[in-house]
Image (cartoon, rainbow, N blue to C red; front, side, top):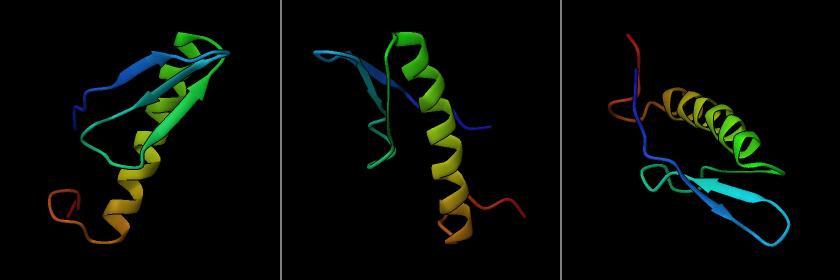
Length: 61
């Protein structure tokens, strides 16, 4: 199991989230909770892509 810091920021009309450890992995939501939920899904999808690409440290053998 991996742990990543998530930053959630209030925008003008919603919330945005990102992880400094996973460049390009972002999410948004109407509420803070929804942005966090969407970010967990985005991280899972991002890690899946890294594993498929054979990135070091992300492959489960």
